[in-house]
Image (cartoon, helix red, strand yellow):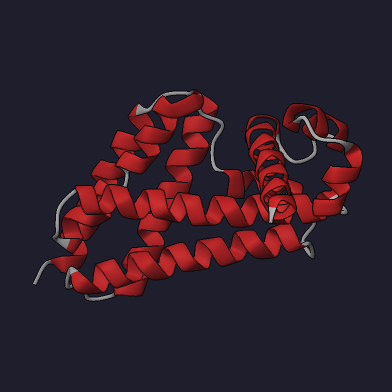
Length: 192
């Protein structure tokens, strides 16, 4: 039992270190020796958990997918019980990201730019976007949107645009502008 706890702890430390490094410096900008050093594990321990960089990148993106979608949902729920309010309230998750630890944009957009088209990293990124947009479409349907899938995709584009512009400009005002655009879209799509 003790070995299992140690194994889990090592994997968590490795993923935590990799996550911070990949987010700040990109997938290509971080070597495995740097992750090993930051995680404070032996090379043999590292490679027992993650035999290749691709395996580490995939684990990082899967963990980030779960975490980021949970942050979006939590921000939406804090905005209230109305789906229309949730569709605009979820932008608070982006503002929280600015406040937390510096802002380096969207890890999925970064991965998509750096990863080969046929890579597992790109497939995980596409799956993340599809899951996020499906959830946004569900919220849009609950809000009474005439074309909920379309509204969901449009809100997703606003999220991606705010993350990319936020990275470039380092200005959280882009999130407020995206939220305002989302508010107008929701009103337009739910007008009867």
